[in-house]
Length: 285
Image: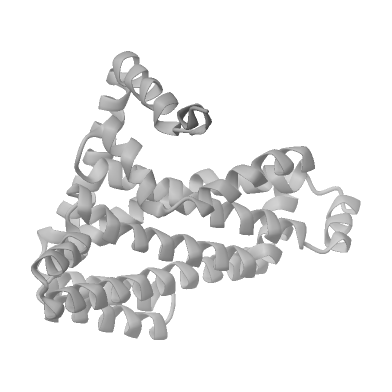
């Protein structure tokens, strides 16, 4: 019996699809590459244009006035630590990459999560896809991304988005399913339009779970940043990779701790901003 007939090789079927996409949609991929590079380049230029101390001062003042003093203190400590590690430029590159990836992931997952909470058939269709996306090892996403977009920051962004969407989508669906029915009925009884019910009742009620989803999205995106260093994405991931290949524990540890500082910074800033927005919406509502 020929055992080769019983073997399943996904690459045999996927490789022709990737080749077909590269042949027929090359201008589309070029446009996506140009757009992502332009956005990333703009954010990085803005972060690296001023001296580090000026950027830290502006970020701390912004956090203090927009959110609160506690978040401002965390911002100061996290950014100062990135500066003291000697990886300021790499930290800003990582910050730009993760910010873009998380923003795109949330913009995709949030509306899909609302749809999944509204339509159970859609949720049943999406759920197995999310299971597969979260079960597949994250570095696997880099392979097709590199095959389509070549090496660099763009495949890293694409793979990070694919890896970051599932937790945010799941928790968005859970958050809206947990909104108390009596609040929805109260909003409908007062004659409020669906848009007002969404923004003034559902989102504020779902905010604690949405923040958990955002936190998971940020952490998973930062985990992908390290793997993205393998495909030339730069930033702190490249420094971790360099420390691994050179067997330099100090280099890898410093870069890893800088990634932790970026994670804490993004988590506190996003959580504080969303909570402040929810409180102001509830107050005006």
